Length: 136
Length: 397
Image (cartoon, rainbow over all chains, first blue to last red; front, side):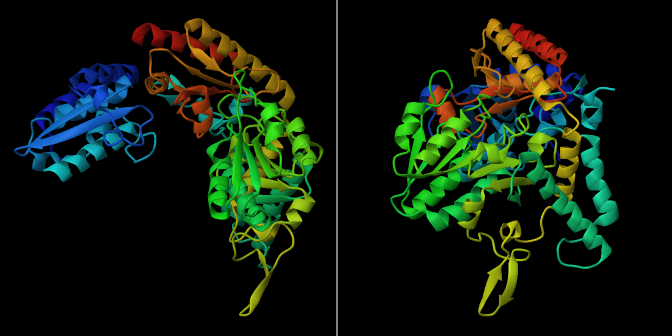
């Protein structure tokens, strides 16, 4: 599928890294890319179920434009949130809903895309998409 | 040739590094003989068991029943029901013994140390029947509060307790737990999932009424386990799942059932898995299990000490008899991040609540990083693990 430019650039950048540790370090650094979602605002509705870490997010759609605010206590999980933030924030909700989660595997940041209790990324992605769908 | 060479998976690399498999409390790896036995069965003898008279059916039946013989010999047990694993074995007791013998107002005693598989079946039954569940607390030294246990036994009909904790590696005082339960007139079920990989338990001598465990934690295949049952408890069990293999006769006016273990093995059983498990028993029969256990608990103790020196909190005591499990947390690096970094360096460890949330609630935490050693692990691997932990701590804390 066709990804937004920012994701294509990220996929290219990840493709240049061979070492899994360096990939994780890069994801770790991308935790800074999230739009801050303060811990005071975390509650049961914002919790990403199925994550081992505490991961919370909130999506708003204003005039058709998506904004994701998120945070997690595990830096790599928050880094995955950062990647999703880069992929969807400021974009039209209809375009965002076309996005498939496969890009995470193309980046080499996941061992599996299947929904499971250990797959934080998939649970985050699915919750984001469900909220965009509901609020568009 | 080392013991490790018997396990083909252990020669692979993960993320460019030699695999160091330290998630054995979740499942152990399989020696080539187990893989070969299952392949051989499907290649040469595949058939359904117990009914047909043809040659393949006879070979399949012998293969399946051979596993039961291994179970009875290995654990010195008279009754061995084959299940899908520990979870199904415990659920089987809940449905077949619990439904027939527990009524409103009866008491079941559990502990805070139980795996969810030894909690949820009882909660379901308790809700359905109006049964009271009492939980024995875990103390600061990671042992069960035996005073509270003694008190909890008043009017108890059933005790369900874990032999060895999957989070802490702590081996409970099972002899005392069993003796006190029986003195109080209660039956007792032992969840031995984490015990049987390390300890060749004598079921008759143990004197528990039920003992549940899985093949895959002792070099056998996934999808198969067993419930050992004492004769009197077996007589009190009613059929749970109905269908083929468990019946004697079926008419439109009713059915009669087998009187042996088949009564609780409805449907086509796990034939290849049973054959694989027999091969695992045979392989393990050539291993000096007590010597390996001593070696592994020493590795676990050394690893725990090193982790404490690095600044981690370690949950467990690592005494002789405990399982070689080390659960720990670092004060600033999240356990999930830690496990991903370790995976990037080839180390397979487990993180999370390990299906024991009541225990973690008692410890005041939501998860740990768990390292669990088994027969093929070495001190050298533990040293490489600690080196990697040090690197991760220096880089990310």
